[in-house]
Amino acid sequence: MIAIGSDHGGYDLKMKIIAHLQERGLEVKDFGCYDKSSCDYPDFGQAAARAVADGSCEKGIVVCTTGIGISIAANKVKGIRCALCTNSYLAKMTRLHNDANMLALGEGNTGVNLAVEIVDTFLDTPFSGEEKHARRIRKLEMAAEETSKD
Image 1 (cartoon, rainbow, N blue to C red):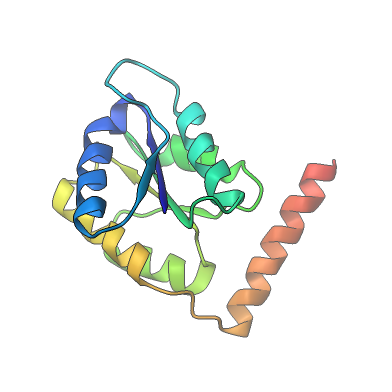
Image 2 (cartoon, rainbow, N blue to C red; image 1 turned 90 degrees about the vertical axis):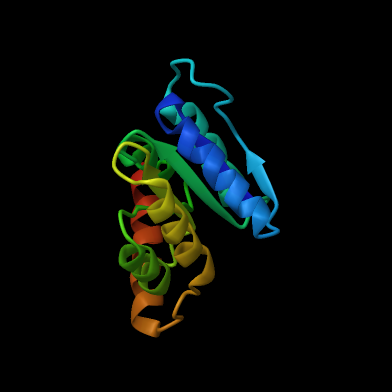
């Protein structure tokens, strides 16, 4: 299952991504927002991130106007590696090297066709499993644990 969330600035793109994911036969859990009324991106980005972190969703996609704020919000959840991607190459590399479990997109800077291409690349690219990348991810996780103790 794919967790998805957006604020009002990412609502239209989120809805198009949901339709695309459903066309692919994927289950989607929408964590909001549910219309274009002004709202706060941390509420929806973190809700989707918690579902990925606790394992109830395999991966997550979050959308706001730029993708910046909602990616920061998602990355505040322990266990999340959310990458803001503006092209398919970045989506491929963040999966191969960072084993990112969430993707952030910006509706204001990413058209629908490109967004769908990025989403497909993100979902279809496995983690490389190379030791150097696994080691780096472990270091990120250890740093997050140390920071949470302070």
